[in-house]
Image (cartoon, rainbow, N blue to C red; front, top):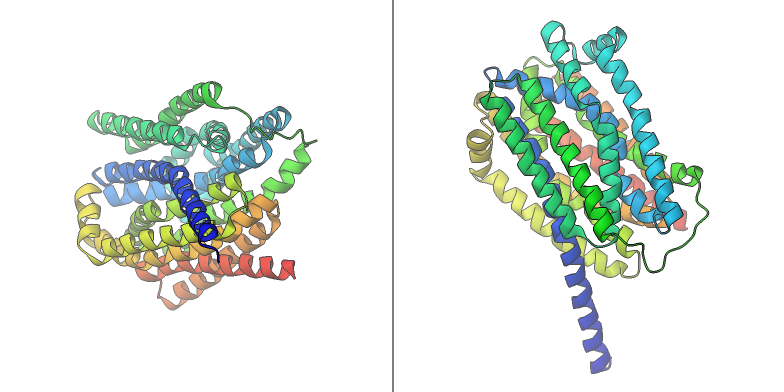
Length: 433
């Protein structure tokens, strides 16, 4: 190969990797800010008189709310892919608003009706004051389904404009507001339910207002904007498989909690898995941000995107393993989060197994990125169904045998991602043939 050609190719590769990094690293901080907010909530809950019970009750409420809220997870990608014209952008906003309003209906049923409360009671085998606390959480969190839908849509447009630094700054402010509300509520002696619920709702409202302001100041349509004859049907065909994918992801943890709630030490196991799952997301969430690279930059440099993903997975996996194998995780769980006793020990065991999860997520998200760009999201929905089926069957077998504990509960999460990744990969390869 000619020396000049080789130098030019190396130069282009270095430039693309640097551009990907400039685009990507603010998104990793965005994910970190959102996940740290959840760690702060766990830390405050653990410091209430009945810390383990408070953690478990919030985990139950978050399971129901998260199941519905998860359908909005791919809203930034939806806005990025289809907002290539003014008509497409307006259609995306209206579509997301309608989706958010529809999602509030089942949450109203769960939080305000007797039949909804009976359903919550049957799922998690809770009654009395515990049941009332869980339904109260759901009532407080109800507006977030619309608010966060709009936030995600605006975030996708700012990412499209490569304003990832702006997105990160707004999310850091969100994190600060969460901490302020949590400390204020705890110091004032407010009930845990009120403190944690408002720490999600109030910062989200402030964040939405700031996102609207930033959008009006900084967003411009792509130079190569296209006047596509989009309809709500086009958006729905793209949206329902990714919504199903997110729903199955959100259902994964409640399924594990469902079987864990029927073990002898249910409260300890659920609280420990909640702590381990939430903390592991600090390392796993950056892997999810990789899909933004595909949607924004397309498939023009697929080999470069693969190299970038492998490098990021290596760094994340190694860091997570170091934390799991050293006293660092115990210091974080006990000193920062206030977790003690059996919950601390079980959470540490679960976290070590969760070090496998980023690898499975990386493989899955690579093929997810291809599907999003090519608008072939149906295969993502199929993979998600395989994921939840494998988790249900495996958890049922473990619980029946009395083998469901911190380690095996964490292994179920890895199993779900791995089976989903293999399914989407095989689907993509056979569809090409």
